[in-house]
Image (cartoon, rainbow, N blue to C red; front, side):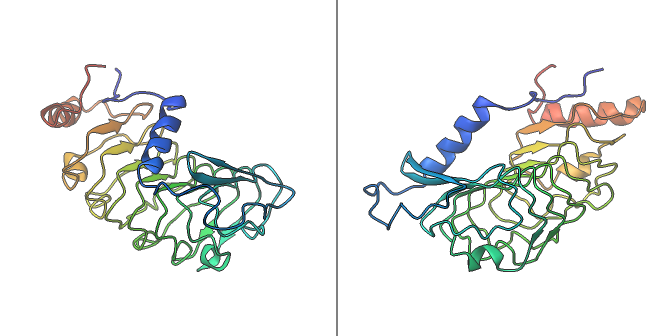
Length: 251
């Protein structure tokens, strides 16, 4: 039985195009280089301007800290595939990187995030924390990131520590491959704007409709690759609920 409800598989080029479009739409059309010196780039990073975004890529450089000396005018930072383990309170703000719209911290060793780690990043739109060592995230960690739209947490080990997050703007949340076994009814009550939810490749045997009711804008739900229970009645209730909400695609 295929339990995917709209649900597409892995997102690659399509996802990148979506993220770029999302960011570009919020960027003022200012002349390149008008906001500061774009030459302040560490030797272990590559810096460039693309679609009016000032990018810095420091991926795969064995870095242990977010403090890289990158210019504070950078708007998109890829610091994935490093060895960063802790994001302390106000750490990103202290680097001066308060204009970030895109931040990729995937494939690091992050196991602890301070409650105010992302404070001061008022323009942050896309945050990728996939494939780290997280087992919990405090509820209000992203509450001040009013422009955050996309949050990727796949590949962490939350298990029973479901992230009960509070944020007024997140529209896409990826919790795939997080070893989740159960989702309480209020798990997403703090994410009222959520439209795209990925719960694929977890350990869930059931998903109650009540868990999804607080999400009036939810349109895309991925639940494939879970060991669903053979409780036909419960599964039929869920499928009926998703169909009524227009989230089934017949797959």
